[in-house]
Length: 204
Image 1 (tube, rainbow, N blue to C red):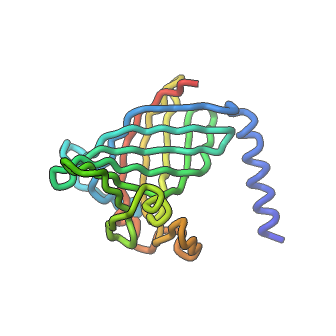
Image 2 (spheres, one colour):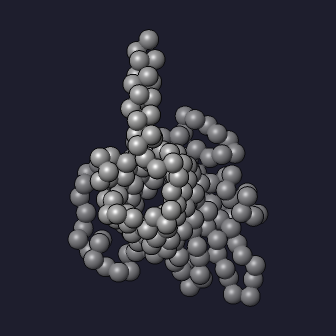
C-alpha cells in the first residue's frame, strides 16, 4: 500500500512539471569532462584536477527532450596511445525544470569507444567490469557495454544551459544480459565517477 501511495505522489508531482514544460526541445553544445575520478560521496578533490588542461577530454553534448523524457549523447574526443578516439555515452532518462531556473536530469546508457588507427578500419571497444574489450562492431559494443549513469544540473539562462554533470558506472549491467541486480553503482563505484561541465543552446 505504501508503494502505491509513493508512486501516486511521484506521478502527481511529475504531471504538472510536464505540463508547464515545453513539449519538445533540442539542445546542443560543448562538453568538458574531467578524466580523473571524483568521489562525490567524499566531496574532496585536488585543485590540480580542475586547473590542469591535460586532465580534460572535450566534445559535444546533445539532448532531446519530450515533456520530461530525455535522450542525451555525450561525445568526447581524446587520443589513446597517439591514436584518435571518440567515446560516446548514449543515455535515456528524465529531465525536469524547477521554478524555471534549473534543469535537473538523470539518465542511463551504454558507453562505446571508437578508435581510428592509421591505415586501418575503425575499431570498437566497450567497458566490461572495469576492463576495456574489443567488439566486432558498434552494435556489439552497444549491447555488451556496462551501462553508465549520468546526472546533470543546469542553470537556465534564456535559451542557454550552463551546468555540471556527473558520470558513474553501474555494477556491470548491460543490455545483453540485463541483470537488474547490477543496475545501481557498486558500493565503491562512486570513487571512479567523473565530473564535467557543459554549455548548451536550446535551438527549439
